[in-house]
Figure 1 (cartoon, rainbow, N blue to C red):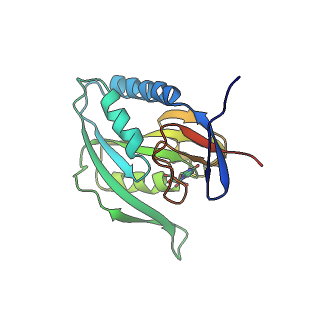
Figure 2: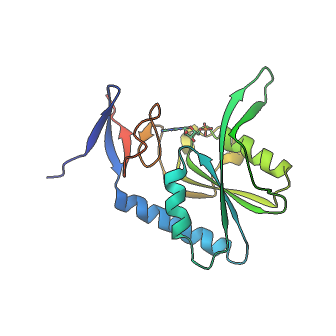
Figure 3: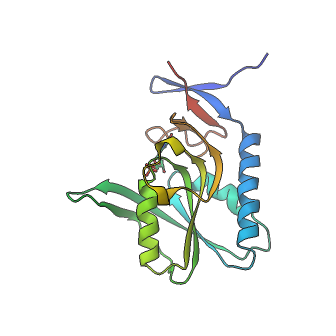
Length: 185
Ligand code: IMP
């Protein structure tokens, strides 16, 4: 008999969807892909806080030991102003120069793609030579910005809300070692 692990957060039930072993396989596959693509380059990983910190910690240790790379962190909040174009607010600003760098944005999940869409434009404007995206999860059905489609994806998911492995529900459940999906009622 398979016993499904589940948790409850603020009255919502979440069931285990990706086990730690499955996550480790996904991370390895993404890391191998990046190691091959950036073999002769010197990428700068830009980790989008808070959610991506767990994925980033595993990813950076899973890439090839010979990959000469750097890692830095930002925290952004994207919102819509009066105009039709979104504006990106830096809560933790970028502390590294990206001019002429091959940048890999590390995200926990790409949903509408708004955050990535804006971040990519910002990094290009700062003179990055290339900007790619590695995301642990991707919700293709929810994507609204074509240029935000991640280049490296751990796992695709339909529209459901997920928690764990860095992903939160109102700030909680980031510490779970597996990824849990909201149970359909
Ligand atoms: P986007 O800008 O619409 O792509 O939103 C991306 C951000 O929304 C992620 O970095 C997460 O912080 C949050 N997010 C989207 N879907 C989920 C989810 O299922 N669980 C937890 N956070 C999510």
